[in-house]
Length: 604
Image (tube, rainbow, N blue to C red):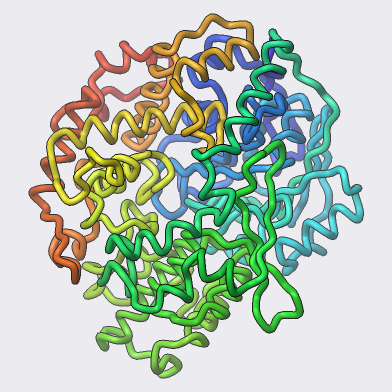
């Protein structure tokens, strides 16, 4: 078998044993790898209706056929589980050397089930798994955990770990790797914590051969050259922070808990100002020619740096009403060290601050909105002290337990907090956020690209948006399954044709562009099938009440009827029923009948 190891490692933490299962060519060709293969494994191994914190909820790490090929931006891995935030499919992605080390262990995926009786860390290699006592790691930050394990096991080991937030089952805890990169969304770190698994080490020496190595050698050179051209210029220069000033100018930078679409003090948070006024170091993931990562020096911190992305700056700056860059940088660093999602943390805090402001909640410790307030709330969330115990449950659950009167401005979809895209000013993105299987997700669709295109008409809610979003989701599913980094997407002249050529050169298959496109559709339908199995209903595809009832200060607005129309267009484009269920004929068309069990009474 070319391009794959062909095996999945099954780990039972309670019994401290492991087994190996084979992956067939048919399954690999249908679901490829990354989020696609992870979704298939989750459907197979996650019992229906299980609580996300139940030991039998699997935690899945998955590589792809591109990992190990040294193609630019190909060193990524996916993590999947049933999300403790949404109760639906939870998947997240991260990158760098851990992906290649995982594949070098001789496995394409690792499925972890059960829960240890006492805290553990495990080491995965070609020989399977070794189990170690992990109690001495408790309380360590993510960087401390990684440093400690590397000093014990060796610098050549790659570590995935949780911080104190994961230990304390904060529902939006992350999994950290390679010096602070995060598998950040949907609470995968909380599931890892529920299993009493502090860390995983990966170390291997297996090499996966490609079918046409000479063709791949040429391909590597061509893509590397194209990846440092105009298409990736903004990411090379400023990273995703390039978005901040642009979004602010377009009135699509959510601020003050999505009450406004822009801020006046944009210089505190724009990529341009930060690069001019602060020391910024460029960083690359493994096998990446772009180098989008920016390590920003935190003022008054003795040279300490933090990774800064647009989403973190938005969530811990404008969204929570801060005007202080230094505090935003310190809070971002704190979140990475503690292992919590900056988006979910910022949205949850923004909601709580508005509740206090409107006297829905009495909190004597919070006075005027300011820098110390946000930092204090982050501390309370991580360690579940005071009100932080309820805020650690995420915005959806917190709004039910703290202030039900605040549910109308609890900014989440299906339980996952909203990212930094203003739906009232970006109508394609609004639809994508509403229907995404992951919840309020900006990374599983390229809908915002349509909004910003010349033909996008971002202020218009139109029936054609359904096909736009469905196509964008399928495109993203292929990218996230192969796995390409999203930032390399524009270097392709014909994405599906060129990606099909790449996967054929790796595997020796004869996959066509149309077959690859169908893989994306199949993967998204599989994710939806999982959600339906876990209780999804039509009412779950929506946006927060604030978005549908309150216009922005610049006049942009979105009504419930407009969103409903776009959702109907999306279901139609997908070939689903009017209520959003998947007909058996569609499952048959996509070859989804091979799943372990489909309850057709729950489908359509």
